[in-house]
Image (cartoon, rainbow, N blue to C red; front, side, top):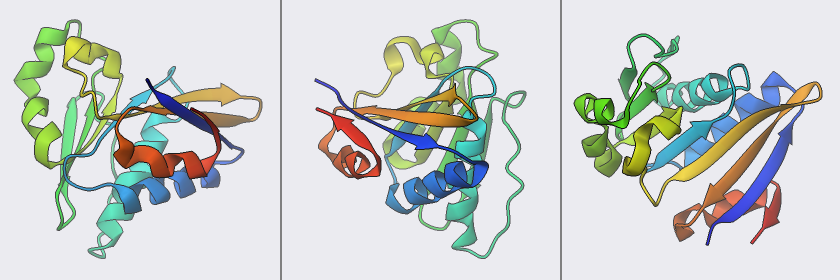
Amino acid sequence: MDTTASVYLATDEDTRALGETLARKLGPGCVVLLDGPIGAGKTSLARAVIQSRMSRLCQVEDVPSPTYTLVQTYDDGESEIWHADLYRLSEAGEVAELGLDAAFEDAVVLVEWPDRLGSDVPQDALSVTMSIEGDGRRASFAWRDPRWTWVGRLGTVDA
């Protein structure tokens, strides 16, 4: 059974702060699935996670959207970070060609449009659904693996 929580993000700075919080908690083997409509903040959240992790090395990263490259990788000194945008894929079989399955095991992986993974969705991943709500956004979380229990402290929890 999934545990869920959500948090309202009134400003872009709130989204960035959430990304920084996630960045501090993620490590090798952590997969974050970013879902939601175009413009809901998936890339903004991923960018904040990556920039925060890279800042540990005093590196400033531009972090472009991987919409056309499909995957961008970074090395933060602790692990590789894979940022995947699967929007342009038409079938789950195309995912195998990207090498995500190996990255799921030992990298920090942020996947936009995770529905394109089909049955290859890691069961221990943290799902984050971004939505537009009023003038802000809402990040809704769902997880099964106990390693994500700390997410419940970010907002309202429904167990």
